[in-house]
Every structure is written in structure tokens, then in C-alpha cells.
View (cartoon, rainbow, N blue to C red):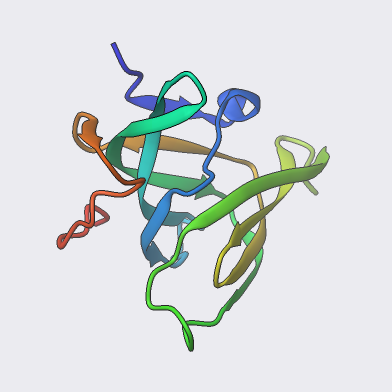
Length: 143
């Protein structure tokens, strides 16, 4: 059974390499930042050869976002794939009630960086077997 929900406590066990990013929902009064992406649940291999992927549409939402910087350049490429998500600089929030982290989402077309108190990632449908790292979806799953 595949997990359907992950949180920031799962960060060390997660990886977003080659996950396709479809959309970004910018923060509102709730200070949430959401990403619509295809999450690679499982890289399938036979020996040293990758034979496919189990991929699921998902929404990755960060909480209490501040210091947001977006630098994406689509001049040469109209698709966006995540290279990695980095987390650093753990510290107490100004009120002392939360833990803040600095996050950087490195993509093949640029980067997105911000501070946040954590995240959750939820699958919006079960994983599908794919020959590629994405599902090439037409419809966004982010609301």
C-alpha cells in the first residue's frame, strides 16, 4: 500500500528528483504555498536499468510561508521538473511556538526559495505505472 499523505517529519525519506511541476498556488491570508506535481512514488528497475515509474498526481503544501522568492525562466523550456528540494537553517519562529526551516526547490528552469514551518504532501489519486517520470496531465489537481 502506498502512503497517501506525508509531512515534514518524512522529509529525510522523501525525494522529488524528476517530479514534474504543473502549477503553483501563491500564498494568501493563510500563508500557504501549494504545488501541483506528479510525485514519483517508486522508481522501477531491473538490475541497473530503470524500467518505469509509479507516478501519482499530488499537492505539496507548505505552511506559514515567508520570504518567498521565485526565479523561473521558461525562455528555452515550457516544462518544469524538480531537481531536488533542500531544507536548511532550522530555527525557532519569532514567537517561539514553531520551528522554521529555509526551503529551496531547485528546478531545471530555476528555483523557488522561502521559509516555512513545515509541509504536507497528499496524493490526489492512486499511482499509475508510467514509462516516463510524469503523467503529462492536462488537468490541474490544485484548487
